[in-house]
Length: 273
Length: 273
Image 1 (cartoon, each protein chain N blue to C red):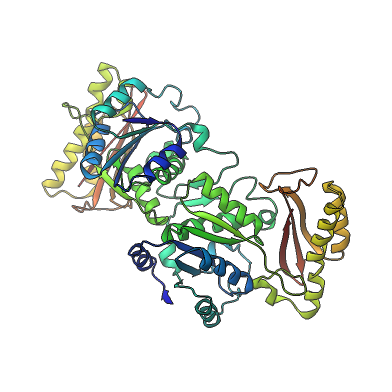
Image 2 (image 1 turned 180 degrees about the vertical axis):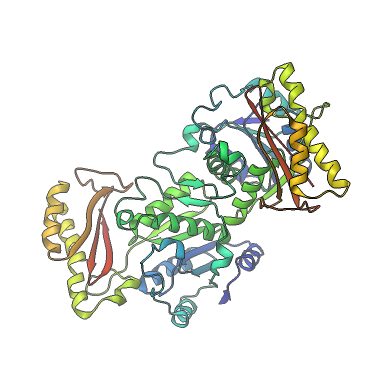
């Protein structure tokens, strides 16, 4: 595995090889969720590139940019074991410029759900993803379903700007207790963690309701809120897969998203129905 | 020459051919300036693509979007004679989307000069150019030096977003009287046109001063303003080639830009020193 910190060097190395490229952009602190992305990239492409970059522009003032977990040695080992060819660790000063052209998330779909409490977050995500995709020029780029709104917006960016890369969505990986894996789970105390399980439980309840034929969005939401009690809820949203408001769950085109605060940590989860 | 209005169809046709692509994006009303771009594209690439799209997002409310000259038949003939392979006439509804991700020109360099009287203009330019470049995926894309600020911002966009296309700058073409060619010159009366010549004359004066060793920006500006009298001036700016303020002209790294209003028409010109 080659470790590369220069975008120019990476581009050059990749251009020399006329091979399919699978790309997994990450912020490090790799866990089984990332490994699932890498495995899928490994299975579907000749070359696998993973990037680790804790992107400052997607953190708002007062968020956990400085304390976001950084585990360079462990991440490197994980990438090696997963068969990564290129580990790309870009430097902020090669990615960002003075007086820069910006990318701005859509007025509606960039500012609902996560965008409500984190206004501007998705603009930072899209900005760095556009840069990284163009540096790597992957055949396929892999993103987790856990960050469903992020995934949706990246797909929108592909569509709106005709990006010639295939965006591949990969299922959420869960711990044996059902909690969706996240680099921020490390912030949870043992007690928090128990409380956090109410999140996947609420999604499971919703899924069971739908399988019993209950599709009314308000009815499902009410039941989910009861399951989530007494967590501090960010949102419980039931939307179409293009993130538009619906009144009834339509199988194959719906997504249920939850954000809740547990011991000061913002946790996300969702289920695609 | 193939005329294509679907972005998808164009992409498909181009992908089938593993050939170098020269691309000239235009808003139509083609003149010798555009032909110079096409000729350069023709000389340097195996396939030449010209697009004609009067891009609504780069016109501000109250500007000449509706009256901007449209000369479909003449443009088509010009492209045929110039050896264009693909004339791409996209439809607005294939390029633009509801609740779209936006591109925003840089705070400083997007809002000085042209950006002062046309705030948001360059955001619209960059937005459509990003889309068009990704649709065509040219080896080389050609832009005129006459729209110097636009050219600079497109080069910035290539740099900031790692676009894998070469941006080629092509010299301004002038009429025999010295006026820089522009699709908007057709708005000028005979009398206006005479007045408009003060613009290239002011640049010529500046160039002569520099060749005599006068490099002080304020001295040159003062002389230019005298030559331009009594035109209504938008700006007379002497900048480094990366559009930063300078006090002295430095040969090989300077640009002098003029905008003046003649008979209600905004005219641009510049000289690279």
